Length: 193
Image (cartoon, rainbow, N blue to C red; front, side):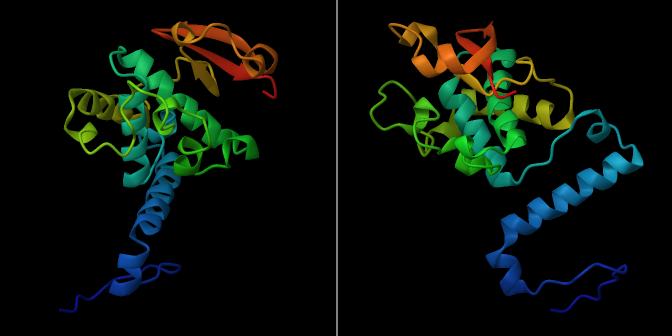
């Protein structure tokens, strides 16, 4: 089938094969373009701090929050997601740049990605999307993306659960400041901020 297309100057048509190969990137580019246009045109949500992410990035953030902050209230789960978003915004090498997947899977960045950690959901666990925690985290992420849920951490790029430690690690003691407890986790800003 063919469909006529009306294009404005500067728009392009991408063939079916390329669309299938690069669907996630195209969606992310379109979402980013929509967010910028919405912000410029004053559309509610985006001009109030809304964020645009690809479907894969959304799924990873939801999985990570369900794994890392299950049992936490909405503020606690949002705080965990905001740590990833704050690392994305920082775009520093120590966090593997600005791609959500790279930030989440950065070596030893999050307990749910480390195989030796027992008692955690693993991000690739097929049961996570069926869980109540996933559904809860998805709603919280939607509130973050629309701008309804602001960052409760004040820009934190790190968090840990002090109940799982004998003592705070050296990197935490020497490399962070402005610590704040939210639920079971303590959140902190990087000393570089």
